[in-house]
Length: 169
Ligand SMILES: [Zn+2]
Image (tube, rainbow, N blue to C red; front, side, top):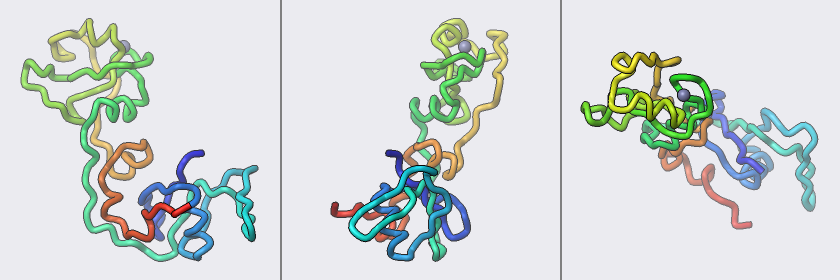
């Protein structure tokens, strides 16, 4: 089962927690269920609750510092939904828009998902040189994007222990 998304009291996505943790937070009145699985229910000793997909904290949690998601090849593929930036077909490789040999960086703005054929065809050229325009511009995922995409953003460390703690189940 997938983790439950936690929204701040302000509805801003904060983190994900395990289902067990989400249920505990709701039972402790620290969070309310915003969305639940239509047919699934949690049943335990004295508990009967719809399985939460999204919960929202009752009290606003201040998150002082949010780090940008670190660049990774997997992250680029996830960000681009495994679609090739040149032809839109399924992508399995990461292409450097400005090739590394021309000083192009391993960065969110310089990399796109690419199918193996287009990556090979573009080779050591820029999109202009190769006559292969990008279907969309690469972007830096926001902390919320990164979390929704399941990218590690390092922001969990900034959350209070009671929220991130794993139950001793
Ligand atoms: Zn392609």
